Image (cartoon, rainbow, N blue to C red; front, side):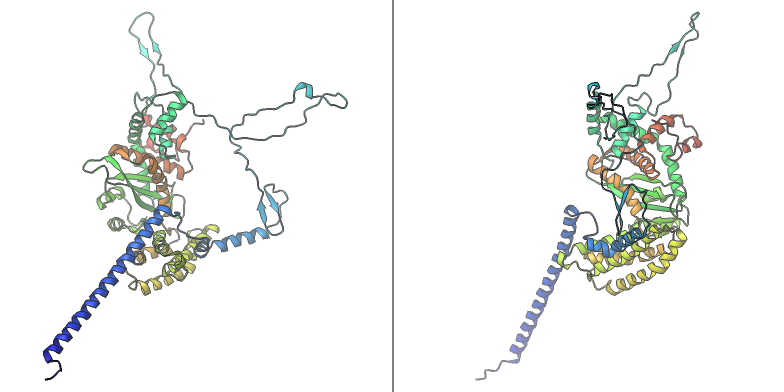
Length: 536
C-alpha cells in the first residue's frame, strides 16, 4: 500500500496553500488600510485639537521663527547699525552704553493732545515761613506728575423746540420754524448716539443688550435692544448710496483682494436658523505700490458661497486688473469671466504645510521634515519682502529683488514639489498641502513678475478679523436686513480705519450731512477721505 499523496491531493493542498496566502495578503492589506486610516484620523484630530486649544501663531517655536523668517539676521543688523551710530548727547529718551543704545525704562509720557485739568497743591499759609529768619517763602517752581483720568459717558436729552410765529393783527401768517432733516425721521436716537452704538458694536464688538445696560447705567434711560437694532438697520440702509460709491471706486482699482467668512442669520427665507451664510470681503491696497486712491474695505452679505453670489459682487471689474485670493475655485471663475490677472496667496500655502508639521509629534518636528523644508523655503520668499520694506523700495526696486533672490527660491520649491507630489498619501495633511501648492502654482509664480503685486492675501484677512472678533460676541444676525446693514456699517468703519479716520467722528458727521445730500457730488463729499468733520 503506497503512502504517497495522489495528484488530486497535491492539487488540493496547493489550492489550500494559495487560498491561505491570498487570505493572508488580504488581511495584510486590510491591516495596512486600517493603519493608514487610523493615521489620517489621528492627524486630523491633532489638527482640530491644535486649532481649538493651541496658540494661533503659525510659528511653533522661536527657532522656527528665526529659521523661517530671518528674524535673527534682521535683529542682528539692527543691533549692529545701532552700535555704529554716533552718540547723541541731546537724546533724552535713550541711554548710551558702549555697545548699543538702549531705550530708557520708565513710564511713557501721556498724549500731549489730551486736555489737562491742573490741580495745584500748595502749602498752608502757616507753613510758608522760613524757620530760620521768619521770612515769607516765595514760589520758585512746581514739581509736576500726571495721571490718566476718564469722565464717564453722559446721557442727555436734546430737546428740539420749533418756534411758532403769528401775525398779531390777523391769523393768516402762522409760521413754524423748520427742523433739520434727520437720517431717521422722528427717530428717538440722536446722530451722536447712533454713531456711538454703531461704533461700539462694529468696532468694539459690544452686543446691543450690553449697550442697553450701559445706557441705563449712565443715565437711567430704558432703551431696549430691539430699539437699538431697528435703528442700526435703518442707518445701514440709509448709507447705501455711500456704499455704492465705495464699490465704484473699488471696481476701478487696479488691484483687489477677496476673501469670505461665515455669518449666521436666524430668519433667512428657505434656510434653517442653524445654517451658515457668508460675508464676502473685498479691499483695495490704496496708496501702496499698486494702489491708486485711498484704501477701501467692503463687506457684502450673501446667503451662499456660490459663483452666482460672487458674480454680483465682482460685476464691473476692469479687464486686466488684478485679483488676489485664496484657492477657492469660485475666484478662478471670476478671474476668467472678467479677464483678470489672478494671484494666489503664499500665506495659505505655508499654513497648510504648517498644519502638516504641527500634526506630527513634537520630537518629529525637525528641520529635515518635508513640511519643514517647504516652510523654510517660503520663509526665504518672505525675507525678500521684509528686506524690501525695510529699505523702502518702490515697485521697480522690489521687482529687481524678486528676480534676483525670489526666483531661485521658487525654482527650489518647484523641484521639491515635483519630487514628492506623488510620493505622499494624497489624503494626508502633507499630501493636501502638496496638491494645493501644485494646483495654485501658476498663480503663485505671478507675483515675481511685477513689483506692484502682493505676495499674499493677508491684508484682506486682516480686514476680516474685526468682523470675526465681533461675531464671537454678537454671534448672529437676526434678519437678512440686519446682515446687509451690518455689512454696510462694517464697510464704512473699516474703510475709516484703513484711512486713519476716527470711525465715531466720521459716522456722527455723516449722519448729520446724509439727509441733505441730493446729487452724486453731494454723496461723493461724504466719503471718509473727503467729509468735513467738525471739531468736538
